[in-house]
Length: 475
Image 1 (cartoon, rainbow, N blue to C red):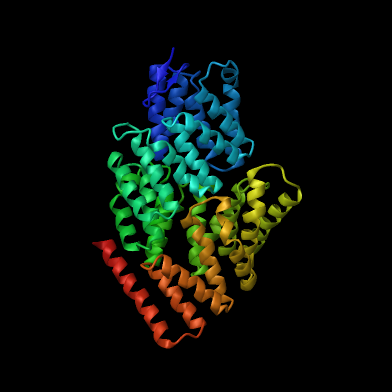
Image 2 (cartoon, rainbow, N blue to C red):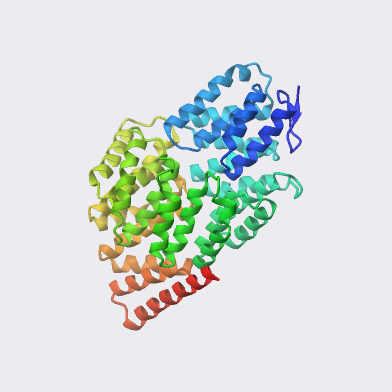
């Protein structure tokens, strides 16, 4: 028994039916479509000795970035160990088994490196390419988000059934490396292949976000909701992108409505990977001076049931601290810091979580507590010092912008006119069409006691861009 995948790779333990179900599952997994686990389970039941559907399911558990799901991935691997040990699996399957074992063991970057080498030998192996891309995201390897895909894409052709997946991954990699126009164009090419590719939608949204194209972003997301918002495990994150555009356009009510209906609602799973977006949106509103305590309080309570006592992924810890502070629970935020400090004091256990916590996660969590306690100068100094390596604990430019916004807000609240002016100047230079950036620039100029005409010019620019964004959104 042997079957060939859609890219021509032979798997010795696969049946034709098992391969067909697996290929369908990989596409659903890449697009975050809700039936994916059902499809992978069907592939496993049909063809239990075929490793790839087991591995795809284990990766999905690891995507959740929580210890209980990591344990589930370990259980999947334990159940397959007998087949792995027979030596019957292909070299591709053996590489995936090694990568999952490394990730389960806490060596995320080592797992990413295994799939990187697999891609050199098998550039048309779609699961390794797509999952390796996710690993680069979790590990904060921005360059490899683009270059892993760039190394492999020339082995593909437009008529390959999974080529759109490769384009969608490349689009996000281009965006995370500052190639925003190319990211938009590549993402739209991916969507021409598969309109329901939620990852490609997300890549295009990022390209608009980073250029401050708020009106275009709202229009793009809202006119395509049928492609990404229905029966999709990634819908909450794409709603978060929609809310960011609404927030920067000045439509706070719309952003909060999106939060209530698309990001954090009764039926939403209370798991870290979905609660990140809820915390990230409310924190932006909080640092801008909006009272979001009625929404942040229940979110803060949910984080207490989700966040493990031993830190597992510091990006989650940061967002839990944000929810606690925004919800008025300083003790909860301080506990997040205390458990991270205890984790550091216990010594280096060789995991990426430990190094990420030491380099970025713990300083960020302390800065968030400082902001909540009104220690704005301390918050600003900490965040300014780690800007150059904040990417090391994962996330995207858009997600880590919460840190830059916190830094700017701390500089404004702490009375540091020179720092606030410089940071706001950076924002209007890098994204000159974003009305939020110009509003903060006006605030910074006011604090720095700039000439009145300059302040008025900045405020008028913010108002004009806000009107332009709303008109574009409704066009």
